[in-house]
Image 1 (spheres, rainbow, N blue to C red):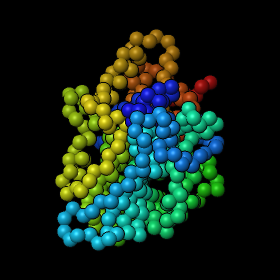
Image 2 (image 1 turned 180 degrees about the vertical axis):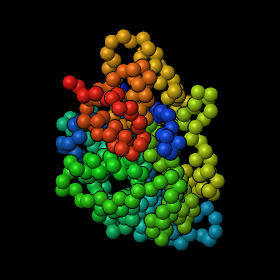
Image 3 (image 1 turned 135 degrees about the vertical axis):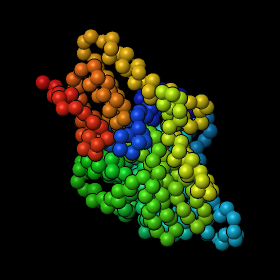
Image 4 (image 1 turned 120 degrees about the horizontal axis):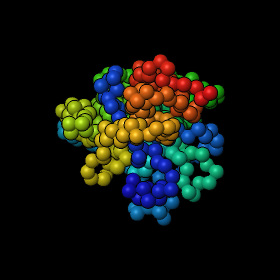
Length: 358
Ligand SMILES: [Zn+2]
């Protein structure tokens, strides 16, 4: 990721500049990305290791493929190993897709897009290379979507049909956002959704039992997953931010503390900036600074943000209401996302706050 920062300095990233806001009223947790309006257009199945020219990387990218043997007990028979590989999203921003394979069963986490690189002119976005999954689609038991950011859901309409349209397990907000997007792809197959809630336990197959737990991110309804498998217990964590409240108390660690007691063989965790030491400034500081701007500004205020940073959008609206401002929302994704979040109760807006442009 560090090397990405250098290469991508010329354009906005997905996760990099984003921070979560207050915990969702519903889940008590807070659970990001750009929503370019230009969502359609040429898509490329990237065959490159990481979507970036090798020459630009400090270290060459290699596929991550690990055989995980049981922690204890009898020596594993040949084949009795859990395999993990990522088709995107590791040490890079975008096109998140990770795969666990055990015997003849496969479960997949996320199916996101990546925004183009300097060396991909004419490409709107890049999706993971799913050739292996297509060839083994009979083994796929589930696609699990950890949250509604485009680098986790954006490739779904392109790949679901190719990988046999497996059951899609996700949270309520992600389901609505995936469904909304699916409307634009009339030839894509109808998705078989299973909506999961915090601490739901779902037996996906003989060899995979999943427990979902909420984590803090810049969009509500974000989950990480405890995976129980004959090889051992694993945690697959999605993007997270450990934020601190005004008093300096860490938020959202309790769920990881819970997971930590589950006799975990291996934790899989990759999040933007994960390798950088230290802590990010708290979201409360962002809101405080916004408030200062609201207080000082006499005339019209124009605020730019990512349409998927729902928590921050909610905070901006709250601050606007506090300072008796009207809000005009510009942009289709911005409007749609806000509407979905409002319908699900994640964003509360007073009547009359939002006004049409005219
Ligand atoms: Zn995210």
